Image 1 (cartoon, rainbow, N blue to C red):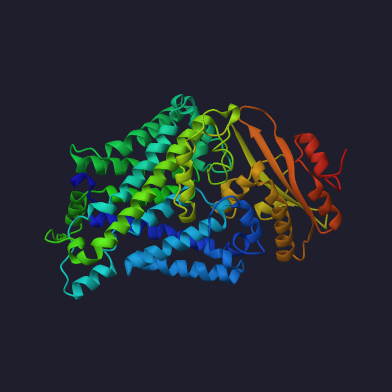
Image 2 (cartoon, rainbow, N blue to C red; image 1 turned 45 degrees about the vertical axis):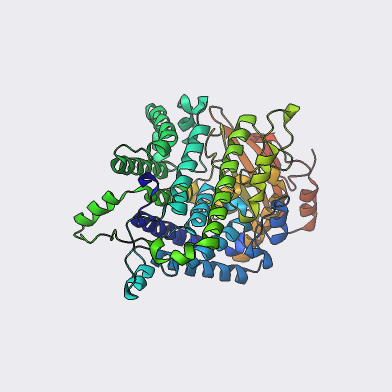
Length: 533
């Protein structure tokens, strides 16, 4: 059972790491309340309900889409995050924080990514783990109360579900990468050409293609084998330190190459649960702190009453059911990828896809789909298909505003002059990672109903903040380029105007315009881009 035991110091390090990442994320969220979480923003509650229709999700944000109410919930979440960081009333803080985080993610799924999903799942398992028993204010209160010090390890169940969750993430994403694109090394070539997320390190790699295939191979086999090797009984302490270091190196390398939101930082915090006791002992010796946790007692012995009887069976039932849902979600992801079934913004099967496929073949079992759907109210389903097949084309959105002065600017680039060549907006030019994911998903056809709202809000916000430079029209345009080909494909997604006639014409357009670059620019400069020709 030693392989299944999680050191209390590793749990504490994971708790502190996750809380630190959440603090950084919340600083961004506070500045985006009006645009992403209020009735004046891009996704008011009526549109949010349309986005989550067909599911059983719920959120605390559903009671009001007032920005004041959203700020109150975020402030509460900030307080709970600080309590988690300090380890004060840790279990209660974790429960509240999971509830608030889940509600935030459901409120606007279009701005979430895999990092948000992993963070949510780690908080869920953390509710049942004693990660406040060490390096916390709770531990200080225990000592002052004369209680025995905790042991070196947490009780196996359900603390072991935290490292199992981490292993599951990488095992699934590694398995899904076993395809020709990754095995041939072509995947990294595609990744470094994605302007919407690439960093300067990725542009440097694009100029040195000889490194791309080895990097792709290392990424694939580390994600596939690392989650298995980390449970090795042979020299387990040394192996775990090496595997954790390897995944930290992987994520730091990814951060140097591309923007992946919270995923890298949440993952590095999550991998800390695998660090063994000898690592912390040696680290304490190096820092001159030789005092180590006692081995005479454990958190379970001091709280026996709480873990007995009905409470223990309740926790066992909840955790067992949640892990079954997690396994069902990942099995369906593997099934879906093989059958090329459609998904929504969060990677979940679209309504009808679980019962209908082309030719009626490759259908997943009904009980598996039912198990996954039963976990929707708690938002504990998950999906780890990140870059399993990198796209073969890059696309980006431009919000061109025509000012009264005759000047043309790009609103998404903070008012920079309109670039008619279609040069993509890099990640650094967008306000935040949430904007990057929102704009990316806005180009998907299944989200076409949200485009007009985006054009209206962007025009309204620009005119409200720049009364001296008002815009008479804003046109939301998608540029796309297939790798290895010259030129761009463009289409007008939506148009907003200060005059009702243009807005009505935009709402009556049934299909976005798919045209060549030269024709698109001529049309965009016309008085009405939706007028028939």
